[in-house]
Image 1 (cartoon, rainbow, N blue to C red):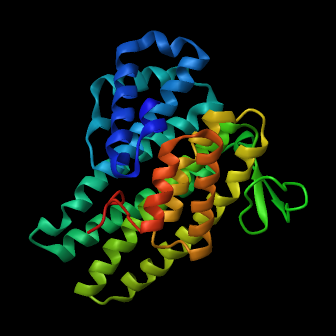
Image 2 (tube, one colour; image 1 turned 135 degrees about the horizontal axis):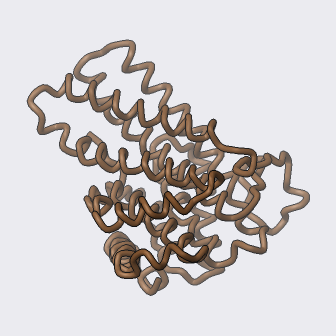
Length: 300
């Protein structure tokens, strides 16, 4: 946590990776016993998801840790049906980890057209898995959309004219793990499809480009609509707002985000930085203002 509070924009990625690696190492050292308590299982879940998505950002293989894999199997056996979607989402993230490593190396392959076609198909299958994940969720995972909320949420950041209400902050956090994952995946699909379009101008490439752009726009809107809940629910607190940093940065950083949503994401990071003193939020806002993408989204 020290790295998150004190890091500067120039050292943001190094500080975050140190945080994730240190937290993941603690999970490995704590072993099976941590999974016997609700708090331990929740912490394991949070850090493991952070490690998985960070492995995509940094093209790391840390998600392949045998110790984490073994602990994940035990954690899965301890979850009731209500919490099984967490494991399903984690499995999709592992698939995205592996794909991200291949996408970065796509330009090194001898047959770029065939390789890109294969990678795009793999990515589209993962996107279908993510879409199916949302459709499989039970009623306790659902959220309510509140229209025209300005009159009742004067002190919270509101994007456009709606916001979401969730059953608890952990459910809201899982939805945003899904959203940032889907944004990153569709940014990858867009990049690969654009590259393939340059090599082979097919109608399929154009259709995939439009489809991914539409998905990104929709998911960014949903992500932004989820943010006010974290400022209004009494249970969120410091930990709840900290979970918003990467989703906001991804929403403000991707090519499919309109200028108004980018500015709103940036301003919300400023609000979090002012309220918590967390320098990671300051650094992320500075990077967005500079237009520095940091290369966190794998591209061809």
